[in-house]
Amino acid sequence: MTPDVPRDVPRDVGLHVDVRVADRDVEVAFEVDTGQTVALIGPNGAGKSTTLAVLAGLLRPDAGEVRLEGRLLTGDRTWVAPHARRTALLAQEPLLFPHLRARDNVAFGPRSTGASRAEARAVAERWLSEVDALALADRRPAQLSGGQAQRVAVARALAADPRLLLLDEPMAALDVDAAPALRRLLGRVLAERTTVLVTHHVLDALLLADRVVVLEAGRVVEQGPTADVLARPRSRFAAQLAGLNLVAGTATPDGVRRPDGLALHGTAAGDPPAAGAPAVAVFRPAAVAVHARPPGGSPRNALTVRVEALEPQGDHVRVRAGGLAADVTLAAVAELGLAVGAEVTFVVKANEVAVHAR
Ligand SMILES: Nc1ncnc2c1ncn2[C@@H]1O[C@H](COP(=O)(O)OP(=O)(O)OP(=O)(O)O)[C@@H](O)[C@H]1O
Image (cartoon, rainbow, N blue to C red; front, side):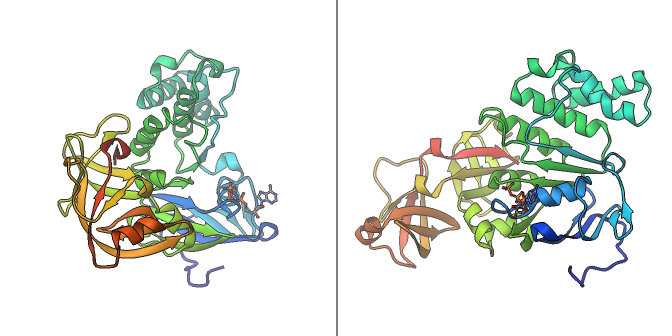
């Protein structure tokens, strides 16, 4: 337990969690401000699903408390049942009722809290429309693709008007083509909602979460604003996760420009962001070629940067320069005569750079 968390929690803290699950050796404390999204990240077995289960009311902790907007959901002598918590859980699999049409799946929440049939139907159609799935209203789950079913599941979760949304790797079961559309949809609907998102993906954390809480072996090892944690990771896991190059800035017609002027050309992942809108370019350090001098043939992404660090990582060396990373072989380090302070050119092909709207 963290003794420095005040017992008298101010009401603008949307979610306050300070719990211990003894037999899983999980002991976590964190808070989420009203309307914010926190990503819970960490390696397998770190306690992410256990924490979500405690929040959803599916698992009773041995000690501690969970408060949602000041209301005690779990405490020494308090236990609010899952359906009465005003939380909604969106799992990896959509888990729709197979015998109900999409519309009735979404209307289920409002119906069970007392809405009339007509009211529940109106709410269901509003949410189906919000997730671009109104045209699917009469289909049963077996007639939906994975991405469509997950959109309907998002509508079902939101139609119950939850005060806390719990997302357990919502993109994990989708194929890569369907993930960007769902990510964008979540970005839209999570904007003003208190949300805890469990994810393994740096991109989900970056695009969807205001803050990141890193769990390792059942404990919070690091937390902070997403951009800070990814830019200056202190835990091993966050450092691994942040291994991708992320260039956040504004969209140009074919890429992203960082506030300091550095511009990258890339390929839009999904619908291209409007020019000037917030966007992020993502590429792997292994996709970066390092040159001692600007190469001929003027490649579109040739960035002149100064080497800040050389980090040996097994059979390669990670070269950090200009806030970016490139992975090169040990032989290349010797051949290029790489050293801290040297000026080099990073070259990355535009088709290796994925541009996402933020
Ligand atoms: N149903 C269960 N019964 C008992 N112990 C469990 C159960 N589920 C998980 N554990 C244990 O609790 C600890 C935390 O696991 P948890 O599933 O919460 O981690 P996680 O971060 O969600 O991992 P993953 O990314 O693999 O889903 C682990 O030691 C795990 O072995």
